[in-house]
Amino acid sequence: MELTSQEINAADAPHWAWTNKLLIDGRPFELEGRKYQLEIMRYVTDDGKVKTNEVIKKGSQTGATIGKSIEIAHGAVHGYYPQGIIYFFPSKTAVEEFSGGRFKPLLKDNELLRSVCNDVNSVYTRRIAKTNVSFHGCSGTTIIGGMAKDSMQVRSTPADWILLDERDMFDDEMAAQVNQRLGNSTIRRRSDMGTPKLPDDGIDRLYGKSDMRRWQIKCDSCRKYTHLATEFPQCIRIADGKGFPVCIHCGRDIDRGNGLWVPDYPDRPTVGYWCSQLLNPNRPLDQAVYEYDDPPKYDTTEAEVQRTILGKAFARAEDILRETEVYQCCTMDNMAYSHDGPCAMGFDVGYPLIHVIIGHKITHDRYRIVRMARVKDWSALHDLAKRYNVKSTVGDAMPESHKIREWANSEAQYGNTVYPCYVQHHLKTFDNWGSDNIVKVNMTDIFDESHQMVVNPGRMLIPRDCEEVKIFAHQMCQRAKFLETDNRGGISYHYKKIGDKQDHYRNALNFFYLACKKVGIPESKNRKRATTQDMSYSLKREQRI
Ligand SMILES: [Zn+2]
Image (cartoon, rainbow, N blue to C red; front, side, top):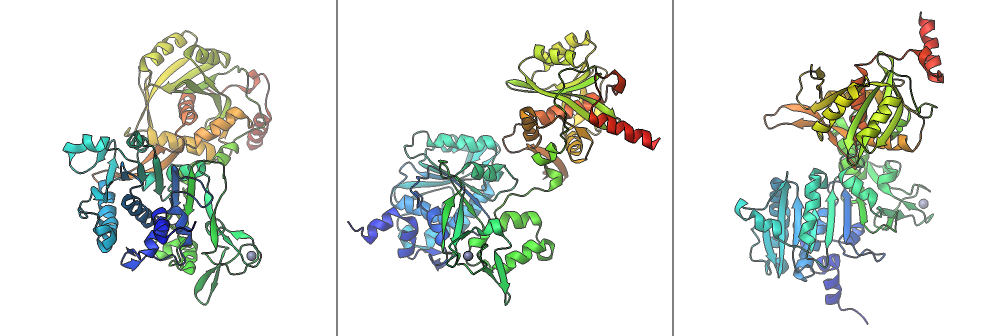
């Protein structure tokens, strides 16, 4: 059975936009050179996967957003989402810019849409044919949706499809909460989109868990495939002041339109796209190479080029730790089973386990971790403290302040002084030790310190690579340093949780660093056995004398 053009249009948003010559920014929608956009605008992928969950990691000017606008209009006109469509942005300003600045012209410029929408000018909710299409801004823990008095109503508006744009700017809790809108839906469709900021965070993390589709361009000469953003800039040939995409295998010219979305992990249910600016036929590729090569000359930065042109996450080395850097602190030693001490201990209470770091100073400013562990309760924590002869312990005072005080009292009889710690944003000094054994520490400073312990060779020695060290390495990297501007225009640095937010060992190490301030250096001869590192170190010291 042949499908009529009308039937194809009903099923397919890009085809519908193309045959109706929908005006986008004043120009008719074109398929020419934009083949990569087609699958992104469809509910089902070309290889037959239904997009219940969809992730689009994108640079700027990729056409992905306008593609979604067309898909929304198409879905509304054809009644595919009867309970409605809600498009979320991280702020009210972003809603106004998008809904008023981009979506409204789409409705206004096209009779086909204008004729089925009476409230074209309404920014927050429009009715297109029989479908409500809403735009909401999420900020903090409140959803801004027009007037405050109907916020309850807005909160309970159901939907069959929700979209989140500028995903990295969303509060995590908020990003999870919006799923409630799909509670009554049998379609339950969700799309997350945005330009990535930090590696393994926000949209980059979601893409990493998806089937990870990349636009693979086929070479007609050697029949192999090239993915531009992965191979950039080697996949660009510059001639006569113009840039041309070339096959990374044989060097011949390739056609950006001659590609297909190939998933790296076809078995994963979430459909993910990586959409770089290099796919846009209007983007001069030579310019992209020049900006990448010398960002300041083009009034941009390395981070901006990576994020907006390549659609890649980016972090400066000084703002984030990487697991490979943590592994470089590994020695050849297994974890110790016991220690003569005196040792220091730092712990972080992370439900349901307490994360513990035990070790000692080697010199005034060098540290050895002899044990890292996760224990289930305070008595297990005590057993460790005793076995490793811990004399000074610092732990998080916040979540269970009475528990830690209770435990501090009982530890005192074993010669282990416990200091409950408050980590504060605005402390004027690095740390402050009270007579009541309460210690306060500046949050940014202590995270800077543990960052330095990792990146300066030899400053911190940790046991050899094993399962627990793997967890430690991962948790060390779940914080990133951000520059923040407050509402008075003041700027300051903050460490925020990123990735899966499991940063307990990082906190425990911070506390361990503090605990070390209250305990001496173990004498080498008292130790059960000297390790290679200790000997090489004392050799060096003798040479110096
Ligand atoms: Zn080739």
